[in-house]
Length: 308
Image (cartoon, rainbow, N blue to C red; front, side, top):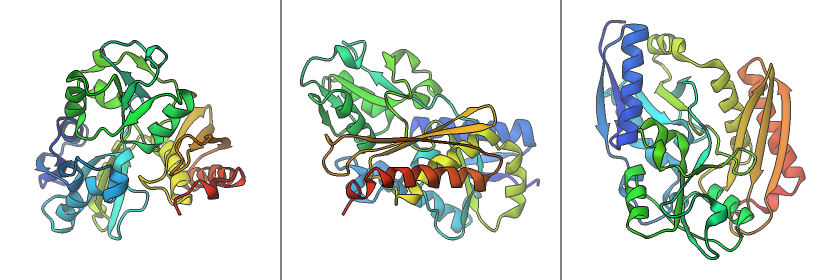
């Protein structure tokens, strides 16, 4: 393949870092030239409402998929956690790259940890997954909406709108902002969302030539782990309106998958949490593991936690 590839990307600083990272890997490992097509998505434009109220995570990828469909780009780079569990017909995830730190980060200027926050402190997050888990640890907190790109969220913290905010550690580390992290939530304390920390490369399903090339960039352990995580959400009808967490870790050849579900409306309800393990050698086995975890959640009463 000698034709230059156009990469569709959002225009936030983090999204551009991710696209440039993929651009460099295409050049260094596959000898492919790529240019970037920066785009503003609906998810970037609507900042006064939570994603669950305006259409979900698909708002961050729709315009990029339109560019793929129209031939203006051949590849779109996404934070995998922002990619809907079901892709529209005609598109496929050609590769998942090695995961960065999947944990959530506690970010504050005056407090070193969640435990140090005063009673009734205001914490910023628009993720229902984070809201339900934060309230399970500290029911006294006021968790207020926080939208915008990473730099905007940090600015809102610095302007005094919040005592603390919770962000994905991966984005902070990728942008050289690890010094803003006061503490990292361990996985057992704050379970990440499916795909957190990983990058997904989306292409048209009929672009076999590019699919074959991108297969060389796949990080197998990350791709299988994320396949299991996304299968949990898919089995439960996962969307931004569902406070669902799922994270898989390798223990030798065994994949250990933790999943947690908060109530979609009553955010102080007890969390439902399960663990499923299996030897996983391919995507089908990973998906089966995710479906097993979803079934365990249903056995615990997940049906009453799902949106009506």
